[in-house]
Length: 219
Image (cartoon, rainbow, N blue to C red; front, side, top):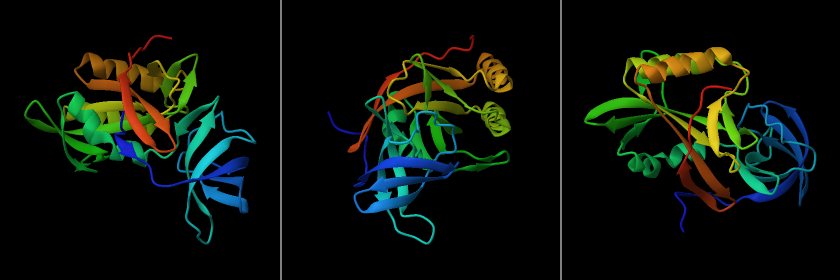
């Protein structure tokens, strides 16, 4: 079975320390590295010794960009840009047609413009990397921005897609840490917002979209 998106070549490293939300120190074959972490989530599975795959890109502040991390023997995608690049083949499954990326609306930018039932509407993709007992969730911290996105999607008849980038996810629900988002999303779904959650299968060579996951709202 092929990939919906092939990844660029990467190198292996081991996590030494997460310095802050956007940078880690790691040890690779060439020695100690400082790497950009393109994911501000809590990522509780990132512990010293965690295996990473990164794209080397020497610069004034970092030596590269983290792409993947390994959790309990399975790869997790930490750079959601690649999930966004893999949107067109996924959207075709739902009968949606990808039009273009990053459309601007009065509420701000969304991830894609798609054609749904003859209408062109915005789509926002939210990445979920936090999984507990097989249930993926988003957001892992309170997010007023996520509420604004849902409001904008509802106003324009748009689509919300939760990309579960941790392969152990078997269902999806809003994280309990942000009950305001959970309540707002549930109301939006009752008012007609289209919501999907899809799990990705990931390895260092690429990403393939697996099954659509059930979406729950109650604890």
